[in-house]
Length: 155
Image (tube, rainbow, N blue to C red; front, top):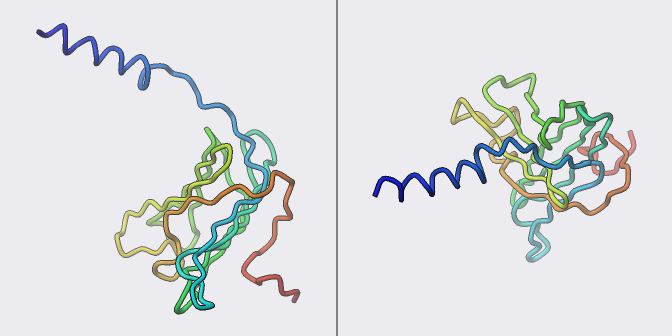
């Protein structure tokens, strides 16, 4: 009976945990978008854009804009150079040491997640702006890395 339990554990360890295989390197260069739902001329839910350029195998330049949607349309943006390792970049806001924003890149998407030490933290943004989301890759071209919070306005 003990052998029946050990065999699945060994197989699980070999296939998932103990393989030691690094994930296939993903070049994250491109533009990713998140589209909210439009109802009665209002954008409901989060929307935004992330632009990424791979600088070398261990660093990316990133600009990110995310908007919370109707009714107040609060928003936040990031522009920075981040370490890139195992298809993941981590952003640590200078004004909030209690959180980390993680960008996990896949071949056609990027997933953003927030890790918080303080449950009341908003990661330096207005509450509810930075939410876990999956952005779809809409372009593989090298983007212009710029502050996206200006909404296309030239100052």
